[in-house]
Amino acid sequence: SNRLKSKAKTEKDQDAVQPTVINDVLIRQYFLRYNSDNFIFDQDDTPIWKLHHLQLSYKNIIEINNLQGMDRLKKLQLDNNLIVRIENLDHLVNLEWLDLSFNLIQKIENLGSLTKLTDLSLFSNQVSRLEGLENLTL
Image 1 (cartoon, rainbow, N blue to C red):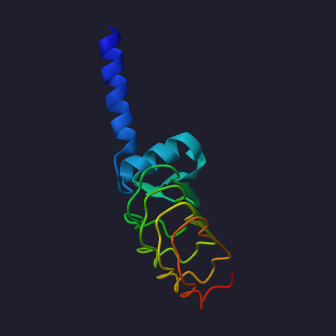
Image 2 (image 1 turned 180 degrees about the vertical axis):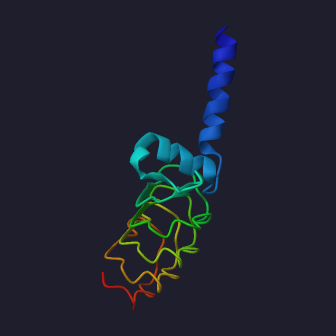
């Protein structure tokens, strides 16, 4: 019995440190835990994401992706992950708040279309130069 518990714990620990990407499972977990009022159905009962806030902190995410169709997002928390590059955010034109602190980002880039962004956190990354902020109203 103790051996089984030990094995289960080891497997769980391994899962916890596996690098991952943003996917439907992560988004659904967040939605079910925090945002039950942000899920809206259209007339034919097909679910449509209408999230305004998405928090995916401490998920070992290695890249920003799979956020298509989430154009209403205003607040995105991707802190404490393994992200190395700012990318695939161009369509999030309503984003006002972006937290990318405690990642592995080296360069500030691909933020030009986020003209509503007023809060950007890049604390504790590996950014060596401040550039790519020209269009922002931070």
